[in-house]
Image 1 (cartoon, rainbow over the protein chains, first blue to last red):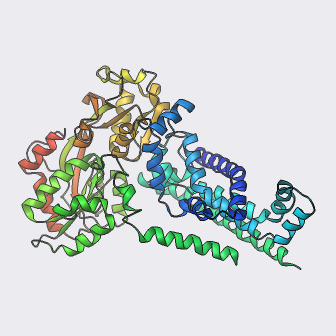
Image 2 (cartoon, each protein chain N blue to C red):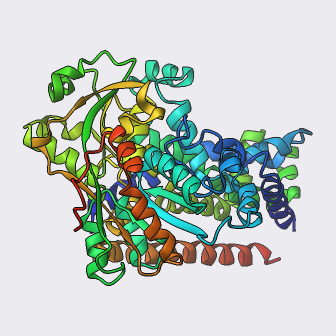
Image 3 (cartoon, rainbow over the protein chains, first blue to last red):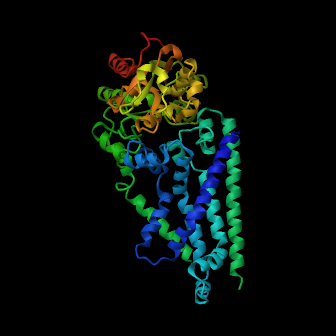
Length: 224
Length: 312
């Protein structure tokens, strides 16, 4: 079992979930409550990774942000090195790629909050920010936790982008899904099998938690 | 209920995206894999001479192209799995072969290790051009290839390659890698790519491995490795000579031939697979590889050739 790859994947997924918690809340809030007529365009952009092949994102990061192009040159002058083959590169790719997995459940959580409670909070003089932290957020924890868990799990399972832009560096970009791929290609089925089995259990566990939690939260919420 | 609506909206969007393949799917295909595209022919690329170029960019359309074109003679379609160091050379060989025989050839390009795994698990290829002759031999031993059909078609070489905009003096050989501007060095993955193994061995034997090992990035196959350097994301790479000489890369950089005493010769073998749908066509193609036209083409791509009828 390649513990280094497993640890790297956990680090990456943890960072992605953390970033998406901070970035996902305001995006989800805006998506849920904005009345802008072109809002659907933003929703489409957020949902894009659900349908876009990972190779598209991989290609843009590798070629578009490579040192031969202007965006890549700007990136390099800011951060000193190109985006591909770095942990930061995987982080950027994974955050983009897991965005809908965080934003959509959070947004669904916000939507399920009773509108009357929000309006009551406003009429009682609470600012929108106070309303958000004291009414909306506490009432949509299930959605937020689901979003975090899903983006964490989705990052663990990410493969295509990492294969294209990672460069397979041990401890830096060789994630657990890449490790399994390598072992299969090299014909080490035993090693692949062990890691694959672990991931299978992990994924099942994560999804069980998500579904179990949502059930309880919903049934609590529906009580009169 | 509002949540359901939302899901419906997402699905509708997905439907829309997939319903307009010309708009969405083909756009990234045009240059998605490599800027030149030529080194990574798609599975459908070899559909038919005239349509091939169009077909590459229109993956979906080429499906119809294949089914509509009746085979010109009785030869039918030969499906080939080819190591990625062969990409461009194989294109040319196959085009000539198709002209000469009226066969249809469909080439899939990838890493030899990946093809070995896929073939062991039932991939439907007729012919396997490996970058390492051990793989075809193994398939023969395991009863997955036609007995005695393994043929040593070429011996590959590796080079140290840098792009035109690099300030490195590759003439200095591996010593050039000491330059601090070289932050990443691309090689193929030694775990399953024969060219990666040769690269690692050469670095070890030259005593450079310890100095560079923290800067290595591993391509999934030698084509991806080339792509890493060509795109400028890695500053140098160890590539197959056949790729450095291929039209898609030739004008874009320069190389240093790595001394052949630093690595075991990259003996490349082809084999007819036992599950072949078209064994006759497969054997025709293997025979064609031995013809003077094909061997001189392989030599032009930097391969050295086995003398005479050296069957293995």
